[in-house]
Image (tube, rainbow, N blue to C red; front, side, top):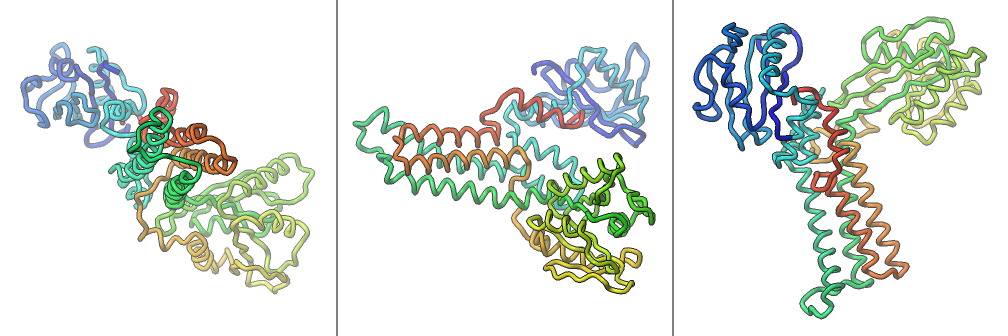
Length: 448
């Protein structure tokens, strides 16, 4: 934690410039001897200087050197950023010179980890940094920026403040019963206070639904029996010939994926193997995968043939997806109609003529209320980790409410209340385990 680290902060490959970041107490003293230009130990903070990286009198590269002194830096440590010419060989050589001069190569996410440990960011804000880097849509970018600003963290801290005030009153009642100015917490006046905390947590989870949708997108499984046009539908939706299309039943034996952005939300389409009874071992594995994907999908599109009556296999699929959010797409509308079906969300179209696709997209927009997201408040949680911790905290408060009805003593109820407080502390990193940090920051790119 106290050594000096370095890493390439720009994408690998050929480009106009590459940036190598150095951070630590000895960042300036270790880089200065390698720089042929102004004395970096004497220049003002947050300035840029022209010169060369030199080793053993050999010029390695012509560079611009950015100097930023603690504490007003990303890591709250001294930082030097070396702007080199882009290219694999040049960047690699400059990095090699730094390492030979006693600067350690950083681990993935180590700069942001130091920013967290030094109090520059909390865990929610640190996660948002990675989300911003990986954002693929404008909504993802806006969501990450709101999280980086600390607005989500402030909402969590507000609930923790309410809980800690309740905990303090309980502790005073237990340890100093003679203190008359303290509010006495009883089984009669505790439930309204717990209900208020419960409502705050439920609001956070309700808001997080939008955040989860933006960050994780919508997983859409395209299912049906063989030769109904599932692969053709995938290709038509993403406007790409990604899935193989033939008249041979069982052509698709493994999942094929494609993406489409709709109203700023990523739709992750999965074309599955045709669902039918089969003796072909490989095809059977594909069918089993299709059934598993149905369970994990946010939306199921069930494809049927317009010119065929419903089969038993069709009916089995309909029974399996009846409790899932789903749309029935009736394909091949140019052929004589033989199907007889009455369902709520039906779209009739033709994958060869691209008819019905706009109607299908509009149906998805309607089901997931995507039109409302752009005008929504994006100061919301989104990560699986954060949402999971809030759910656990809510569960602890619900346990406390249940135990109130069982007339469990207040000092025992305080255990569940404190657990909720601790769980919310894990959201922002006010309480954490080293293993959590290692896992979280290992997902970051090198140099961030």
